[in-house]
Amino acid sequence: LEKRDANVAECTELNVVAKKQKKDIAAVKKMKAREIADAKRLAEEEIQRTLAAERAERQRQLEEEKRRQEEEERQLRMRDDVFSITGLKYGEAKASCGEKVTLLREPENEYDANAVKVVNGYRQLVGRIEKDKAATLSSKMKHMQEDYHSQNF
Image (tube, rainbow, N blue to C red; front, side, top):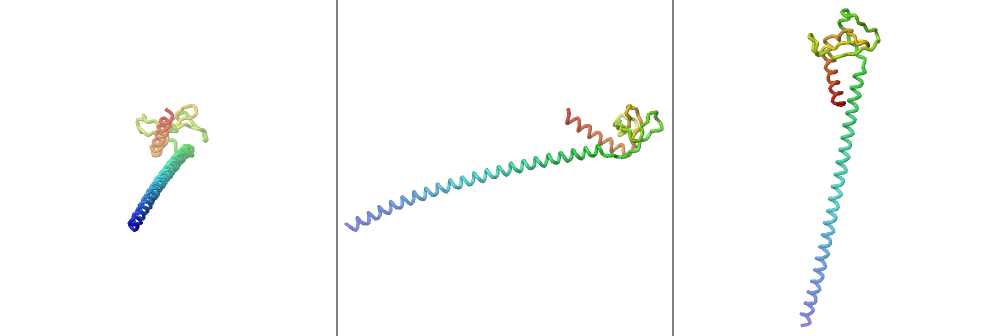
């Protein structure tokens, strides 16, 4: 009987130890689950920070590209291209060497829809840009005018 009581006591003690171990294991699992959840949350936050930094960098690059394009356009507008002016002998108006003149697209010109006329400071017709260069120049002027209107109106 004593032996049986000792066995029962030992079994009870083992059950108590087993229950404690189960509780400890459950506590460890719960702690690990929290650690995993925290790690996932931290990883997600890092991903979000990285994505935000990448978006900001891309935005900076786009703005830099826009500034570069605007500078190229400005340089193009300021560049000293040399064009021959045709029709000088037909008009009374003149422009002196070094005088500022204005170039105007002339899409209604009956001979050349790409014609670009040259007027002096008095808005008098001095002549026109030679035909082979007028086509390219007229196209650039049209795009610049469209860009200007789309940005300002």
